[in-house]
Length: 360
Image (cartoon, rainbow, N blue to C red; front, side):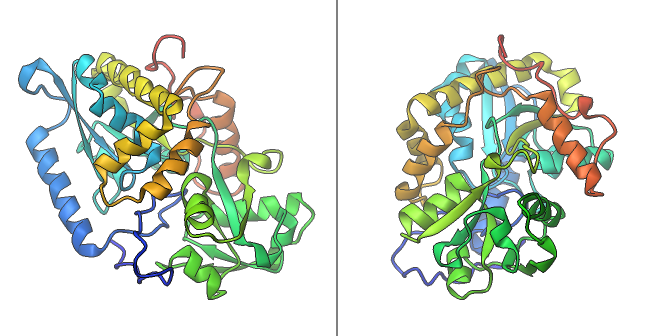
């Protein structure tokens, strides 16, 4: 587990909302003592509840492992819990935060029934022999961006040439940045890569440790721009899909064993979860409040605009919430293959839409 985050120079009185895990393990973690306590609570909950069993009242118990601390990506799950959608579906759902190994290893080890993950984790895991499967996309497109302070004069991908990128250590970063810059006529070989470590992005920018980095629009960009008042510019990945692939991040995942054993339970879970995310779209304020109840230390100044942003990307007109377009998985896997990164021969087993509510 990462060491505690250095104090931010944004001011001693500003509450710091824990950042969600972005495209790869890279964002700030809670202080070590709190993280250890949360891991212990999660472990106790897992031991007490088990996975896929029955609880009092005849409800079927399910354990959902988050990818990070509660944030607006998870709003549909918390709404479904708070509003009784899971109970109405005959389910007793326990939500736990990941242990230091992460949510996907918890899932693969049988310590959770469902986990939040990402396509860039699912495909390499499958390539390594893990039988994890994406059963629903949370958002219909990747809402990641490259963000930079306005004074770096970065307005398009080719402007990144000659600049310094703050890397979080993901294998996909360099191929992705290279593809963006090259496609726009720039020379990616002139970009310097440095490790961001545990520094707050805003602090790293002010110290000129790096010029740009990879973030989620719906969290880090809102925090920097709307909460902290920084003048930043972004290069959204979704605006450059002729140069790079789209992919699903985050997703909900289960194992092939659970899918084969309890498909109807998973269908009930996804139907109730879809109702939760549909309410998050219709009422972003309710989504923000659900996360605030789950993580009282969160800053509503960040949660409220984040929930409004996320609401724009939660449903897919082609197939409703959770639908996964085959071409998106194929395109992303092909990009991994071209980049000599772990990939699969066929994405057919990597995801399924078969468990989604009727009509999806």
